[in-house]
Length: 254
Ligand SMILES: C[S@@+](CC[C@H](N)C(=O)[O-])C[C@H]1O[C@@H](n2cnc3c(N)ncnc32)[C@H](O)[C@@H]1O
Image 1 (cartoon, protein in one colour):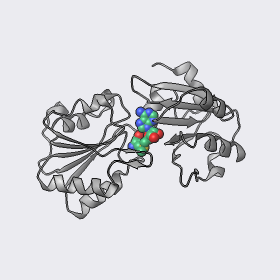
Image 2 (cartoon, rainbow, N blue to C red):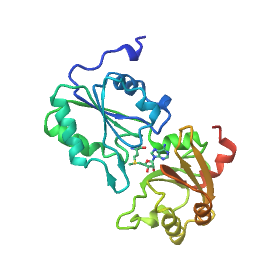
Image 3 (cartoon, rainbow, N blue to C red):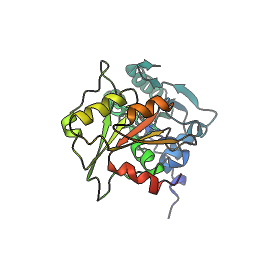
């Protein structure tokens, strides 16, 4: 069988939108690994780990376009324009994003301008933070006894509030995974309790998941306030709400 790492890159692809996964470089797909090593220009985000940045050839131009909350290094429209410009210069251009580019990654928005300019692109999926954090913390997202569905939710605050369909989210037998939820974590917990979720529902907070600095905090909806006061939890974090979190004690392996 042919080793996929030895296959050549497509001659016609001008831009690769690449998911870098949640941090651990060994979680890159073979395709992402191969493409990164052939890059001439890389536009990268804040959440791409140092280990992965180290795989980019020295000769490649590296451009930071990362975004911290409410602090955009480069506006979205400029990022798309840069991709178009570099592609038109004939450079193998990589847009490298944390996790999966199509999950809370604005991957779709960035590709629209490329499509308008008839630029050939490929999208390489990455392991999304929900998946990386759940596996590396020993918290299965679904389990036949506890959870029949899982939802990926943005906990991003809009005008200082998390606006979500709380009634649906408060139903039990489902796992909730909040991205970008740390700033609004107390509001999230209060609303879930107010709309009927059991206050003793376990909550897992995974900080810097899959990296050497990963930390896992386990509490309950009721206990979040105290935990946040006591611990210096810092982003990036994934927040998992549901009975499956209780399995962490038994299944943790990292
Ligand atoms: C803008 S979203 C990007 C998500 C990304 N596209 C993905 O699929 O994972 C950024 C959020 O992802 C989560 N995140 C990304 N990497 C993480 C990590 N290593 N550990 C914990 N949370 C992470 C955090 O909730 C962070 O605020």
